[in-house]
Each structure stands twice: as structure tokens, then as C-alpha cells.
Image (cartoon, rainbow, N blue to C red; front, side, top):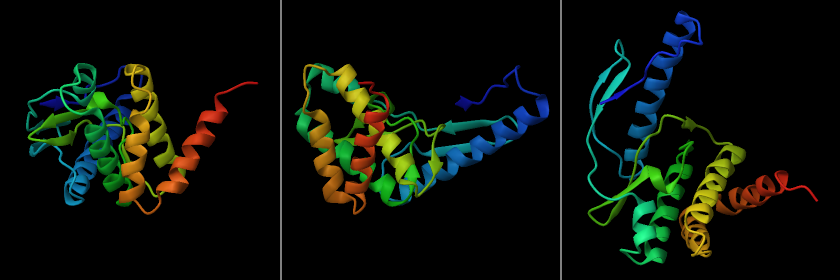
Length: 180
């Protein structure tokens, strides 16, 4: 059960409106992702009044854990991650928190969870931010394997027509944070 809790720092009316809107958006994104062939938890129940979702529990290690333990070939796992990102972005779904902690490996497949920060967007900037976050997650959590993002990007390029533009945007985003 995933429940969106009230935030005391917001006015009650605004808070209620935001929580309901975000709940609906998360459901739409997960449904859209499933239609694109991305493995996501099954949604069993949506309670708009309580701002909650009842979801399938995906048993298995996170991709982060798998890469740390090297329980599978890292390149193969990262290629799957790139294909999943490509499917999302080809359908203009931006995950919003595309990290290896939000990916669970079960049955030989990468499953995506937690679309709560996601959005429907065709924006190259938004997709670039998604991929930049993934790159940062890979390089910070797995610094001993510097080529992981290259495997992700290679699969992403093969599976998504707009990949080059998005990956160029990742480089631009990286340059914004550097001071020379």
C-alpha cells in the first residue's frame, strides 16, 4: 500500500488537490509504461479519497544491489536498463527518479517502481534530466565500474529514435554544474 500523506506546510485545500492530482498522474504513468512493455507493479486498487494505491509487491533485489554484488553480468543488466528507459521515453513518459534503487530485478526482467515524481512529457530536457540522474546514480553507487552508463546508453540508442538528442542534453546538463 502506498499512501500519499498530507503535508502540514501546505494549505489543506492545496495539499488535497496536489495529492489527488499526483496519485492520478502516477497511475496514468504506470499504466502507460505497462502499455509500452515496461514491467511495473500491478495496480490492485486506487483509493482517491484516501490518496492511496494498492500495488503488487515485486520480490527481488534492486538493480543497485545486483550491480554491487555482481550477481549477474553488469553489462547485460545495464543494457536492459537502457531498453527500459528507451521504452518509457519513446512513449513520452519521464520517470522522474530513474535510479537503480527504483528498479527491481525479477524473473530475468527489470521492473520499474515509484513513478511519483514522473510526468508525461516530450521534452528533451525532461528526458535528459531522467538520463542524467540515472548516470549519476550509476557513477556514484558503482564507481568501481565506470563503463556502466556506456552500456545503458548503447542500448538506449538502439531502442529509441530520439536517443542522440537526449544524450547530448545529458552532456549539456553535466556542463551546467561545472565551474571552470
